[in-house]
Amino acid sequence: MAHHVILGAGPAGVIAAETIRKHEPMATITIVGDESEQPYSRMAIPYFIMGNVKEDGTHLRKSKTHFKDLKIDLIHARAQSIDTKSKQVKLDNGQSIAFDRLLIATGSRPNRLPIPGADGPQVHPCWTLEDARNIMKMAKASSRVLQMGAGFIGCIIMESLAARGVQLTVVEMGDRMVPRMMGPVAGDMIRRWCESKGVQVFTGVKVEAITPKNGAPQEVSVRLSNGKEIAADLVISATGVKPCIDFIKGSGIDCAEGVLTDVHLQTNVEGIYAAGDCAQAFDQPSGTTIVSAIQPNAADQARVAALNMVSKKTVLKGVTQINVLDTLGLISTSFGQWQGVSGGDDVSLTENHRHLHLQFKDDVLVGCNSVGWTDHVGVMRGLVEGKIHLGHWKDELKKDPTQLMSAYLASAQSQGQWSGAGDSRRR
View 1: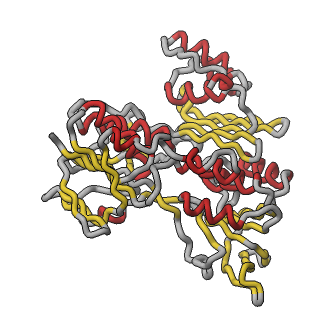
View 2: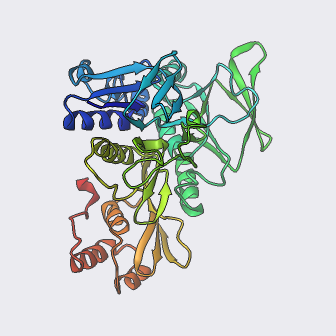
View 3: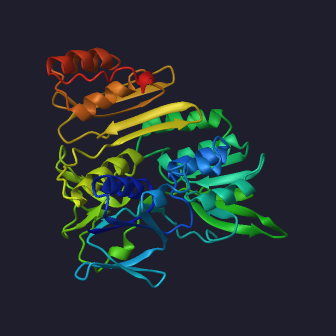
């Protein structure tokens, strides 16, 4: 039987291994993960820091014998290179593994900015369980914490830090919070909300240096580009992530931002696939390749890749572009091409500390985002992903964007696409 090797022990790697085992009971399956932990979900780390779950609550599978029971081998190592001709993966423990089918599911890693002092003992990313343990030791009630970055991941981390009762300062080099998810009005609204909750926020500002305080080894001074100096007991680096694909260089596997794949999640090399945060997957609806580092994509891509690895031809329907964010109690969302498309038009509504922005291409809603508008999150997703033709309802939405439910029900039912996506409270 075939030997399936999976690089990465996150959600994509685990789901792929389980899918392969379901369809090939006798195959050899090896997962290579670079952390000496039970496979876990990074999405659960903030809840661990908050104290909402214990450490084992982050584990992807609760049984300690889950992988042994499925006869899935787990190796703690890091891939160094792939030889596509001999079908071997070289690991940093000196071992080489031969494969018949290979899945690259190595995920992402945090960006590191070239800031003097950023490698000091008071500076930590928030990406692994070990990072979380270190942060929990240092982020005590009333501790002074400065966080670099207020993107999507940064805002999730901010939520967990605020729950620990720290004195929190957030510095974002972009001109607004969550700049890759929100426009200026929405980003500014989120900033003002955070400030009302006691978080000091600087946007359009960079961290220039992190310097230990003389006579106070547990304290640093953070110099900002606006001339301010902030004293901190802990600095969190949350300046974005990028796919872990450096080890692929020279292998002949095509990469751009991530590992390029077709609709079957196969790379340009037969028998080698990619899924999850490291994959730049082909999105059929848009005709482009997209890296969309969210867990639902990792799960979908892993399943499709695994089925193709066991010769059950399956196509990825599309790459989901969804972000739903809870920032200190304020819910914001973005779907699809929220920044708009060439030749498109848009409408926005801002009232009562809420914001709704819809983007159209002809009579199709191609993207949208919202702040504080939670009534019809499911409807927004259904309209964007379903590419439903709104007809005259587009004009109605341009008059009143809040008529999303009526537009969805009328348009989707007339086109036979209704799926009960309406009330987000059912999701």
